[in-house]
Every structure is written in C-alpha cells, then in structure tokens.
Length: 181
Image 1 (cartoon, rainbow, N blue to C red):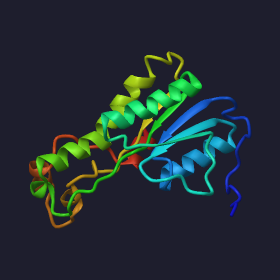
Image 2: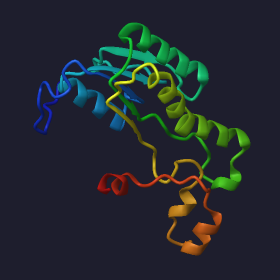
Image 3: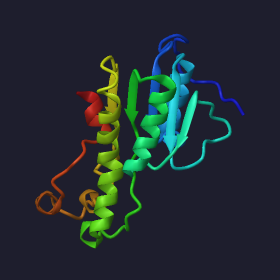
Image 4: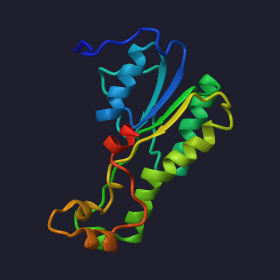
C-alpha cells in the first residue's frame, strides 16, 4: 500500500547523497528513510528487526548496533558498497529495562542502555567520519529523558528537588527544546 506524502518536498533535494538512518524500520526512523528516499537520496538503514515489506531503501543491514560487532558489520558493508556516507542519522535507541526506576536496574541493564543509546552513535561516528571528511550532517536522537530507568523523573508527584537529587547525571534534552535552539 502506497500512502501519498502529505508535505511538499523537492524530488532532488538530496539527489545522489548517501544517507544512513539507524533504527530505520519503525516510527521516526521509518519516516526519515521514506523522506530521504523521496528527496532523491540513496538511503541505507539498519535495525535489529527485519525490513518491512513496503520499505525499499537502497541498502539494508540487519544488525544489533548495541554491539561492537553489529557496528562493524554495518559500517563495513556500507563503506564497502558505497565508499562513505554524506549524511548519518543516529536514530537507534530504546530500552528493555524494567519499569521500576533506576535503582531496580542491574549493571547489565545500564551497560545495555549505554551501548544502544550512546555508544552505538559514538562507534558509528568514529567508523564513518574519519573515512568521509565531507560528511554533511551527523545527527543523534535519543528518547527524552535518556530512556532507561528515568520514568520517575517525569512523575508529577516528585518535587523538583527530589528529581535533581535522584536523577542520573546524563540527561538528554527533549527534542522540542533541541529543535527550538
């Protein structure tokens, strides 16, 4: 099923650009893959899940970017087939952690969250940027507030002082505040 794109766009806006969108099979990542494709880009996407039947990127690599091996597999394949990238969108992220707040999380839960939400982007940036000195854009998205174990920070029953005292030191800005700046 094809759905018409509801917003105006230029068909050659990204003509011949090599774009990588991580986490590109669902949600915001899927929308970015479709939009870059409509704009004329060659789009590579990655995800742990299989590619949806209705999505047709130029290149798809199924891998877990929360692991060093997954990053090596993705970067190696894209560099081998394309020789570099022009736009890198680090969209991968999320959490499988329990809903009980940061004190219920094990060291393994925290490490997995860091691997997926932070280190995947760092590793990909390091893999692509040195090879591609002409990279146009490197963007990273994360779920506010730093998706793992932080649901307690948004509970209205907690006072600001309690949230400051209990909050992890690494905080992501909500996307709406990032986009306003």
